[in-house]
Amino acid sequence: MNTHHWPVYGHDWAVDHLRRALANGRVRHAYLIVGTESIGKETFARAFAMTLNCTEADETARPCGRCSACKRIASGSHPDILYSENDPATGVLKTEEVRAMMGRIALKPYEARYRIAIFRDFDHARGNAQDALLKTLEEPPPQAVLLLLAPAPETLLPTITSRSQVIALRPLATEAVREALIQHKGAAPDQADLLARLCGGRMGWAIRALQDPAILDQRAQALDLLEDALHRNRAGRFEIADGLSRDKLALTPLLELWQTYWRDVLLLAQGAAAPPANLDRLDALKRLANSMTPDEALSSLKATRRTLDDLTKNLNLRLALEVLFLDYPGLSGDV
Image 1 (spheres, one colour):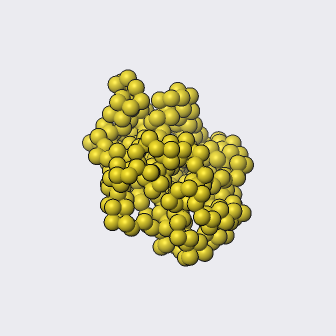
Image 2 (image 1 turned 90 degrees about the vertical axis):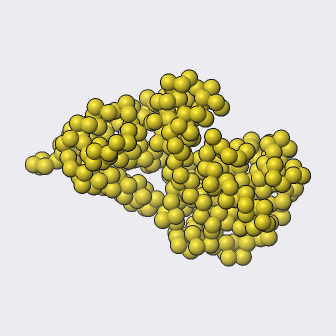
Image 3 (image 1 turned 135 degrees about the vertical axis):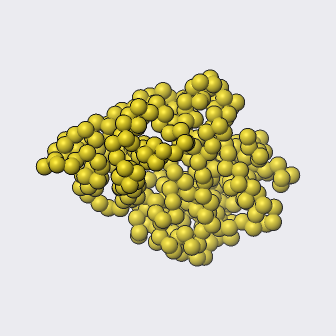
């Protein structure tokens, strides 16, 4: 249950932290909002933008959700809230886009207190693109606020993180997700229970899966692919790597999901009492966990995390995926 009235699910500590800062008149010029995919970073950023620009006279009641500013920010149509756009083909946040955003953020607000730039997937900005932000971070316009969204501070240059206040969003408790789905999204209890367990604390994924059943089908296919790869020889795995390397934008959610799978295997291999996130794959998870040591499961988890982190770099995708599959178990004696 939320202890606040912001239009976000959970993340109470982060909301309370920012509410205290606003009550004391401390608004930073740059915030780095980090957390895993679909955990609610953009929803949180938009709620913060609403709070900063809400016209409700009672500051403790902001965001009110009723004023024109709140409604237009929620719908994405407020002229003082700017959103970056990544390249549709590669997913990269280009230097030209960052510079254009900095030119627009330097202008005085049309009508709001603050002109706010929200950078989705800022980890997709390479070194030069991130550098293009530094001058604004060092000499920010007086009424400008930058909200940078990324999976983790380590994916950005130290010069960026050191000039931003980091807000780390944590996965929500299973029961909190279940309750939100039932109370606010009209989910049936059994459906809410399944999605709450599968989402790994990512409310955004749970909501999308509730609204679009195809997402569960895609998830099943992605896990089928992983389980299939583990039973293939080197050539078979390289064939899968070749296919996956052709769609870089699809790799992030795929590897995020595989990461939860390996985390479940590790917990089972260690004999942990915590129920696995991928509860519908329990039999396969147990078989895999019984066939390896906890160190081997941990190695697979780390390899998946490393490959996920490397996606932000200009690398040979096929080679990176081939290396990943070589790190996965089941190839002993294969030539």
